[in-house]
Length: 267
Image 1 (tube, rainbow, N blue to C red):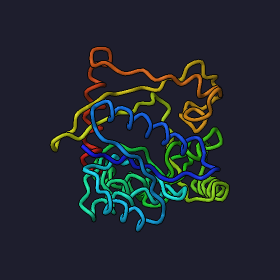
Image 2 (image 1 turned 90 degrees about the vertical axis):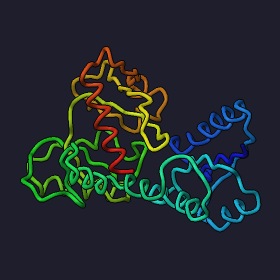
Image 3 (image 1 turned 90 degrees about the horizontal axis):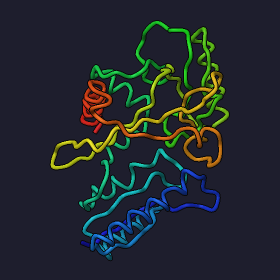
């Protein structure tokens, strides 16, 4: 099969989370070649016309889409899938509609809430009208991924909605992007990997990020440093372990069930 592994073009000032896509592309391309496929790599920019012309001149049988942003803007993640859908070019990963929805955190949370699925209360765009609950909130960008804009300063204690709104506004000015506040849940950090196959969702695995030797005054969050700053305390003290159904018991089945419900609803 003739495959095109597609990433976003990166500038010289690309951040560690942006540069990670190059490692992903190399790993994916190598694995596909070992499986006997003919693989080329390409880059997408804001000039979608150039990408369209490339696809027309040398059409792949499948695009392995690793594009996570365009021109450094996460908000544009859905544009390449939208183009591929319009051209009827098969590609991996989520479609344009799903990426546009899940890339907007408040919008995705409102969708989950409307379907009766559990998501922490939040304050900001799309939040339901309900009494304010004082406590700890995590202030985060609405449309950025890879924990961009999240660090220890993101966790705030708010006694009133006005105080929380002020914290959100201050963080938005600092980061230069829209932010919202989500009620902080002090507990275990879990991620679930699902693979769509023939209209069904296959559970690949459930992984937990462990907070090893975190001092009592350090927020137990997977912030930007934990993901990308090699050698930092959070990076070195947040190992990942995979769950087993035997060890986790009913919790394993419950997490898998909710993850599937979320995937079907947001996809």
